[in-house]
Image (spheres, rainbow, N blue to C red):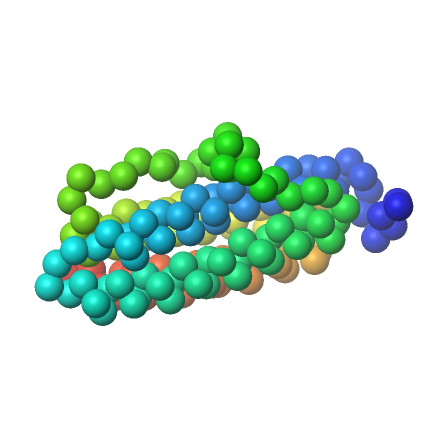
Length: 158
């Protein structure tokens, strides 16, 4: 059925494509956070293990919200690991040492990269593609990632 929400098909396609990249980034970050949760080692294991659990639970909600936003504007969300790896701008590399500080710093860099990417799309979604809903939606994602970054940053030993 035709989607008639006041945004042209061409604009919805551009937005869905960008949202698909964001979905891939969120999914890769989720997997990296799960990996950190499972494999962190050191004297702070339990506290950091639980901390990473809270973070990946937040990312799980974000992933679902991004996929639903793609569906809301009339497109299908990618759903395979292969598609995510082709769309993400994050690295999938793994660490040789699973200390909390290294894992936290790696995840923090990914969150900050996602924030920059999201921020770059806020204005264009609203002004160029006439989608204030998606612009507002990703503004909320920026705020969520900023808070998650703050929590990560608070764990970094200086």
